[in-house]
Image (cartoon, rainbow, N blue to C red):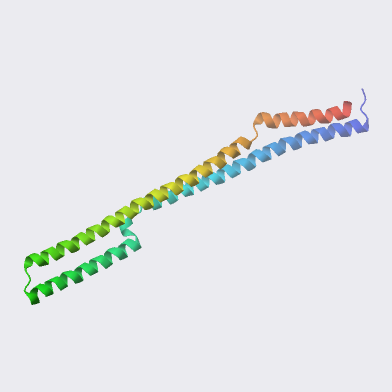
Length: 170
């Protein structure tokens, strides 16, 4: 059976279509893999952010240090005033000790408030981390579902070639 020029052109075109289908499927798979790698990098960044923020010492933060310094300065001032008042007015050592104890309690209460705020902050950090991580996992799962399998690529190639052959001999 002799092929005419039109049939030869059709065979060549179906072959090119099959090759195009192959590269198109492989290109899509590569693009999806690249997007997944980028999302996985974002997950690592999110993990690093979480590790840094969650494990910070709340008492070493600038705002907590400023608050503790102010409370300690206030306590020293009140202790000096209590000692001065006791010396001038004839107060007892017990009254000075009671004032110092009250001031120490104020410092303890302030430290407890910082710790309580730190716990709330950690909860917020954990919620933010989990929400972002879940969103990234959902995006990765969606991309995984879009990734063409080897069978999909092969059937696209065969389908493209068969379609071209139908046009030639059909």
